[in-house]
Length: 76
Image (spheres, rainbow, N blue to C red):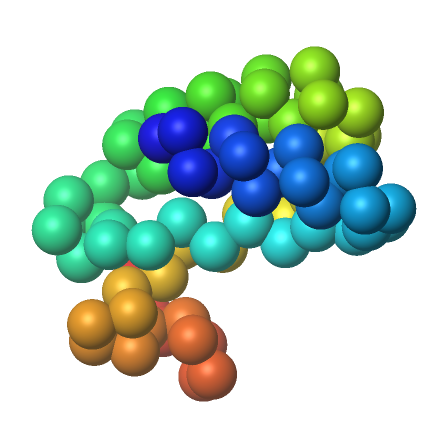
């Protein structure tokens, strides 16, 4: 998504040293691990080009609508 790319570039430009990537709407894919891994791969490739080290960036599957993994750990 273009906005995600913009935000990553802006964060790096502003000197942000650490990122946490929340992968939202995972409930709509029935918490598909394959889809999550696809997104992790795609975003990792981009943030690496921007200048971040993707190996140090945690990716968290969430559902903002249901609140999964937002505050408390979800079994999903």
